[in-house]
Image (cartoon, rainbow, N blue to C red; front, side, top):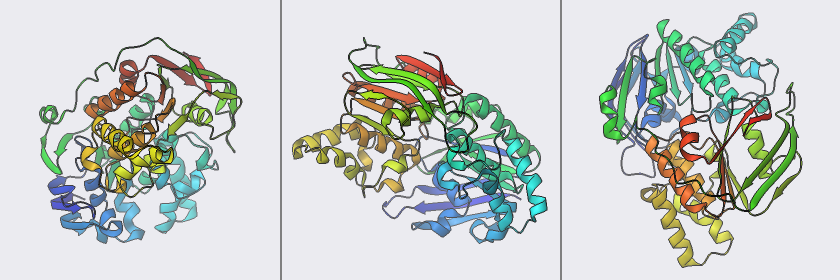
Length: 450
């Protein structure tokens, strides 16, 4: 079935300007299309329109038409969606509806009336195709972010849909997992499914896709690599700030151990970790190696062993929505300092400086929920920075960001962390080399290199 988007537009309730502004695009069966563009250009919004989601669940204004095989995508009956349309969101955790791995893959199949006998082999096949080698009875809460990303892709492809839409499915995958998933998506397209994927890391995917469609300002500005430079994509990440001499010790942890319920092995198997002022520490390793669990232990969300914290420690999770709760971006940036008693003029100056540094000054009166994921992540980081923590912990801070915004974010962190420290988990080798003063590598719940 062919996907046709004709002059599609969408206005969020809190904005007078359309987030998607007249997108016309045709995707044939068997075509693998990369949809890219700078953060906040409307890619994810159009993808949700193409999936029929905003038409049903959005509160904004929709104009134009998007059809799959001649049928408006929002009129495909729920019982038939799994056979026609698979959708993978930017936030895998929010998309999971079941507490068990096998049940998550089975959910859509059961809704479509597939028999239990037929479902079992489909579950095995879908999990094998995304290389998620875990027990089918394992709790979804025990999965890493990367494992969750593979799980929602498995659920989306289990019904062999004619159209597959994916919003940054590689963001939380290690390089091996990303390569494996790209091979799966290429094979799916070769078998006749139309695949549209949003992604910023052009070099990772450019040799796998058939077409590169570039958006900016809610519109398609062209196709092909030649259009990337005009929107700042495909650029090298510059070195971020000089490396200083580590100062006073801010965190000291020893022999951290933790095992999630139903997990066969430890998420942390005896980790020692220290960070001093002036450091920018990148934590790297394959999916499930313990990176996020270590950050949670350092932040105090789980008790994994003795952790000494000399100062204020603030963390920003993989999903920025877990850290956002105010009606406007301005309120998010002001909330923490006001709770700590900042004077009105200090509050105003700090908010303005952070908004400028993170490129969100034009978003201060917007609702965070109306922003792109990359913009929401920068707001969440800004809210954490606003209380001037001694240690800032970030889990996958490049998710949803184009290279220009990654550089801007890390420079903002560097300029405010001379007396503090930044610890960030990432799969991005280029970011680690450019921004970190030290790299800690993990595997199997242990530190293997530092």
